[in-house]
Amino acid sequence: MPKTALITGASSGLGAEFARQLAATGADLVLVARDRAALERIAAKVRARYGVTVEVLQADLLKRRQLAKVVARVSDAERPIDLLVNNAGFGLPLDFAANDIDDEVRHLQMHVEVPMRLSHAALGQMLPRHRGRIINVASVAGFIPRSTYGACKGWLISFSRWANEQYAVRGVTTTAVCPGFTHTNFHERMGLPPGKEGVPAWMWLDARTVVSTALRDTAHGRAVSIPSLRYRMLIALTRLLPSTLAMRVGSRGR
Image 1 (cartoon, rainbow, N blue to C red):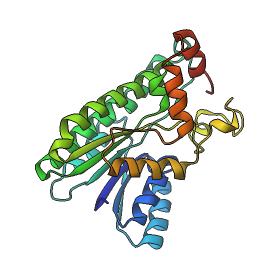
Image 2: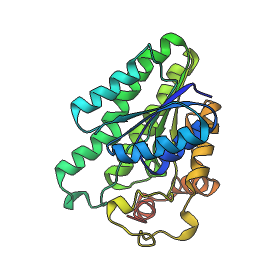
Image 3: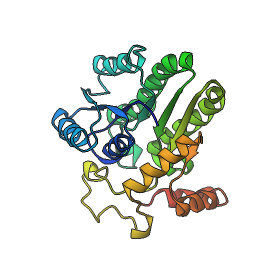
Image 4: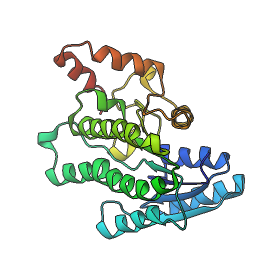
């Protein structure tokens, strides 16, 4: 298990669950998000329960100077990060043409540019030590047509596969974690109250299972982690479907 893990989007959802499960292994944490108060609450609980060191780093990753602050922390060879979890993200409605284009650009930056910059910084200090792991939280949407969200996550999956093949031989692995619909506050932040997402109950996953499976697959050096048999089967099925039917699958939920 890592000595120190840095987690973006750590104030809630999967990020907070990564924090809890990694702290349970004895890992020290660097928690990154915009909401300092939420980060401090999580940090206090984790310190009290697990006795690990928790550093809080408030940053809006879409602001250049604040992102640079996180890049500098990841790059710090004197305080090395052993595991980087690129988890920060947000969703938009699926109708690209109706969305504000500036929102779409910020969406692209958050899901592609931010993890790319942080991964580059992490590799810069991990490769000389021949040790380190990177987790990119992607989505099963990356395997199916699902507006720009699926396109961004598809990039993250492809990049993770390549990086794992390229750098695992030098001691640094990269894993794309691809959950399906997961019980967090992700959809609520899109303005959708629980039960109004248009997704059947059988498609929902538990955050604890997603994270525990992700950490297990990461420990085994796998390039892609899909933490559910039902979603592994669904992805295999969509590869056999005509593109029009695959798009219908991708349009479920909001």
